[in-house]
Image (cartoon, rainbow, N blue to C red; front, top):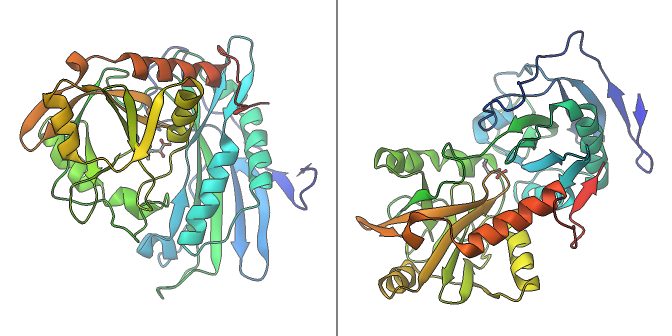
Length: 362
Ligand code: COI
């Protein structure tokens, strides 16, 4: 039994009999296909709070068929990354931000908050235990996936009385199958991801289920992902399926302002902080598709890139707008995109000094 100082809860450790085989160094990892030996979990019951914290073998979880989350998707998740560098340092990037966002998502979904400090320490323990699973090749990381779900076995549509929180770990490579090659993004003018007052700002399960149809149709047309517009007028730019989006127009770096329906990305926030600290002209504002098309026509649309934990900083080479393909920066990664990719990954891996204090070294 492990005791975490300052938190009135113990973590029970349940060992596996045999460990899994780890992927060979340098092998293609893909995204979220392999999982480590152990997971962290704890349960919540109304009146009792969080309890039964444990690190136990990664294995299937039995569910009652009436389990609430399976029917009504009362659940939220997060995504973070741990890195190991050539010095053998284990480095976790801005995980406290993830638990703070998770708690905001919980508020929106009528779910119990976590003790963020305890959750952080539990993940640090788990990552430490699984350190041999952290890949070290360029562009790879150990992806950390926390999930909280309604686990009561009942069919009423209301907040559940029981919840399960767990964290699983997956060694990952690039999110897109072409790695850092610029992606083709389809500007979606039919389907909507969310509307003002909806759940867009929360990292809740249903937001992602609802996005698959549009993504599949865009893929059939030869695109990698869709760019979502505001759900009412389909006029203003919001975000991409798994990333926030940035545009370099003239000398201004623009990203849509957080308006309640856009996911408040941690890589988005990090890029804004890096750009501002380096003297770039940065705006978080309303940005219409019309303005982007106009800028492209005038040769002022210099770069487009997405940001996300899984996607890191990912160049966009083509924007499909109303049947027309707008090529961005000759389909190549631009200077601002490259600067941000190098800075974010540099801080994550320790190649660059962590001036912002974003990394926890275990
Ligand atoms: C992430 O970037 O970590 C995400 O959660 C996005 C996606 C993989 C669902």
